[in-house]
Length: 362
Ligand code: IPM
Ligand code: MG
Image 1: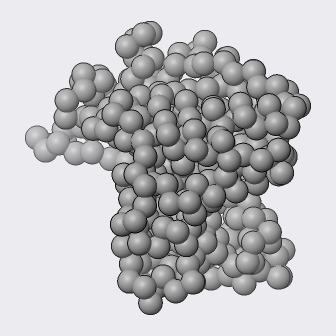
Image 2: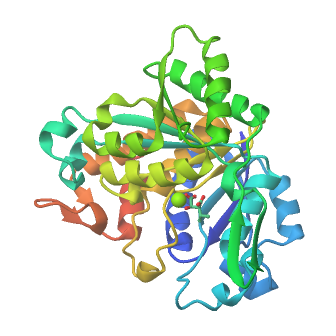
């Protein structure tokens, strides 16, 4: 199969972690007889430095010609980086939001899974961890506060800022359907998270989710308020299978869920639209403080590449081979610094990528 990829290394640790994921993909291609055609694309700070804006129309055009995007991360340290002297719509993160919107990537899948080998990296108590947990956060990605109108102005001498949270029923329905479809392939449970005791958008969310749920009689489901969900994630994470939620709540809850799996360096992600096209990236940020030091954990990016094999290319066997290689490296006791535990062997970004690559079976 021909795999046409836009590769966006981005900023901070992005280039290092993407390099390791590409090593893994090249090995998969070699073993399973696929051809990878990778086109490098600049985005974020790297694009600001080279082209004066975080995502050019030309770059977007190149991306449109590919089947999928493999991305590292974008952004720098707002306190020190000159990128943050620019107006908000010219900053690195604006590129990511534009890319999500332009490609219609409304469904963001973030699987939070606790490897039994990483139990000691999990900050929760043993009796809470139990036999581990495995959840899928389905975050709506092209609506809500991220894309509503915003402005900052002076009203009667007082600086005032407005952000708007808008959802229409179509946007809610399509993400809800995705969540229920995915639940059907898992443990058939959906927890829809909102703030319906305060927000109109959440009340509409509830109504539409209830309608969608009727088409999935096998799925057990519930509504949960977001503040309660934040609490339940650390009190009893085993109760969750699929968590369905809007953009901003999903941003926050997915970071929380990643931390209970040990590290954000383990959390992969896929952002999908109505076609097979997808954007695959780790859920974590660009971590400029550790960039270039061979310290970053490449596993989230490697697992994102596995999601790409599965969701865009339907290469389930290849995806499983990557996941098995990650599992094996952890079982053998290799760890990057963020998930290091007593008795394990600490390795850097490159060595972790090599170890996983070597363990991929054809
Ligand atoms: C994420 C990130 C982004 C988001 C930032 C970089 C804009 O935190 O993918 O979770 O908030 O969506
Ligand atoms: Mg986030």
